[in-house]
Amino acid sequence: MSAHAHFRIAGIPVRVEPVFFVISGLFGLRYANIGLDVVAIWMVASFISILVHELGHGLTLKVFGQPSVIVLHGFGGVTISQRRSTVSTFRSVAVSLAGSVTALLVLWLPMRQLLASEWMVRQPDALIWLVLFLAFQNLWWSIANLLPIRPLDGGNVTAELFGLPAARRISIGAAIFGALWAFGHNQSYAGFFALFLAFSNWQEMRAERAGQDVDAFQVDAPSPGSTPQRRGRRARLVPVTPPALEPAGAPSLSSDDPARLQQMAWNALRDGDPAAAGRMVERVGPNVVNPYLRAAVALTEGRPDAFELFEGAYAAHPAGPPNLVATELLARSGAATAVANRLLARHDSPGREAAATLQTHLHYGDHYRAAAEVGEAVYAASPTSRAQTAFEVACSWARADEIEPSIVWLERAADEGFRAARIVEAEPDLRLLRSDPRWPALRARLS
Image (cartoon, helix red, strand yellow):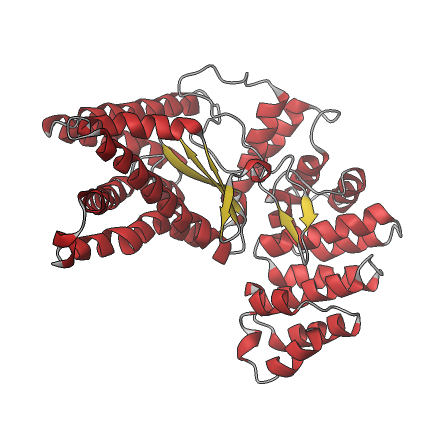
């Protein structure tokens, strides 16, 4: 998606699909009897409201070190990221709530104050309509988004706290209740939309009972095709175009389809069910299964060949696994450094590249100490840019709240020729160091 962004805000790519304006214009037709200019103002307000809401998600992800892409589409907006496999439950809940909280604080509260002021009375009608619409949209749309109905933000919070199966059942009940309320208050569109969401969750529940792993609302950026790309200072996981969402009730892939089985195996590993993952890998077959998936299953089973399998996977695909589940398992088991050392012992470029990829994935999976330790091993193996690697190690140590080793590695980066004053000053990973009395002198060396 980032390749097709129409513009960026705070470094976050934003794409606006043309159908967004079509749908918002249709909703605004209720004001056509007042004037087409009021319809246009409704469309402008809708654009501002939804963009600010999604920026709440995107900026929160950015604070957590996660890249994202915002897309405004026909029925609102979506912030695409890899948070499902890279962000903790607490942070994921914070991201979900951030959209509505941002809309309420940034738009609804100021607009409410303006409407109550004498200054507003003297303003032209167009501005009054804009303020009215912004106040209305950001209050009621925010409240609606917090309802425990998937895929609304409140439904995502419910899924994080209680699990997907429970969230589906809660969503059905809440959506039916919401539909009854909407029809009783002459809000037919909202009523039908709530029924649609109830039906979609019911369809997922049926698929779940049939043993299928279906999430029609999943819009996280998929990791396959996301490759670490060096952008000045550190490899970033660049979001790519997500697959088209499968409409609720549409025929899903066969339960024997290798791609579906592997997806289900990854999900089982992520959910802490290695036995189920192992059964699915056996059904796929050794000649078809993703080598990282096979290695991850071996690691959870405690097999002695797990390290060898990881080494072979990284050697064949140095860009890394298709998601961060395998990295998470390596970090939790304490095996990340051992795998990195095996890769570096190959003394070849793919081995060093693979170890550097592991270092990057560990950092963005919030495993900062493991990332720093792997980074130190990569540095010792003489990577292409020792200065860049040293800087990345310093960032990981800083995020691990280890000030002393972070300063040591920043000094080493300076010794290696790292000079990037703007990057150093703005780097969120180094926030802790900027309060240290040694920071001014250190920053001067890196300028």
